[in-house]
Image (cartoon, rainbow over all chains, first blue to last red):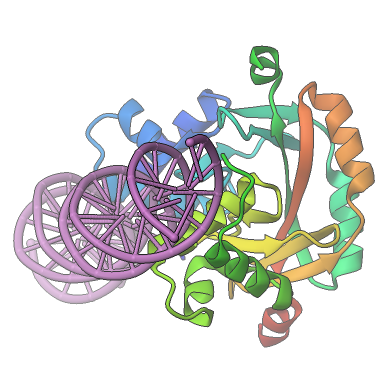
Length: 123
Length: 123
DNA sequence: TGACAATTGAGAATGATTATCGTATAATGC
DNA sequence: GCATTATACGATAATCATTCTCAATTGTCA
């Protein structure tokens, strides 16, 4: 893996950095212009390997990618499938996990599942 | 959704309960006999909705399912993609998350990513 | 400039999951 | 027990995200 970042990969990175949220490959594909599908997927893989973005599998659908900014967790509604960002400092938990599990932990992913307040109100 | 569990769904549930680990739909399909693909997927969906098993998207490949037993987290090696179970009581964290996020949290999923000790040794 | 490596896009291929649909089985009312 | 209805089933087609292939283009650097 080379550490070089092609112009197209930079564009993809900028999209993720500017829209401050998780996007699917398809959403990224729509917001850039004149970049092919394979190239977007390749850029996402490359940036993930470089540790500049993260890939998350939150639901049954496509994976989402997000620019690494601050430590936060996700809440996924089991009913409407909407994903919410939840600000929470996970560093202590990651450190803890690292100690327990006996492997070298780079980062941690915390996802809460349940019923979001909007869906709860409807019921 | 009916709360009834068909004979085939019971078989699927038993497989997950006996092998005490996360299995893909395909692995389950292989270890049962005379149950069609669609039926296994239907059973997995149904059991997930009933809250008897959990669906996890841990890597880039297929989803895995696990019988709900105790609270633990997962470690996924970024190099070999192997998944390790890590015993850790997450209840405190879930409670915390519930408070912060303002939604109704049913369960939480914690996944650590990094280099497993086996891969670390090889490098 | 020339040679070799890396990147690209179009489209085919893959692989997991879901939908369809005719049949089989189970549940319910009588 | 029998008729009626709802559910579950399997085979297979369809879908959809993602990856692969490959020829063409572009970038790198001596």
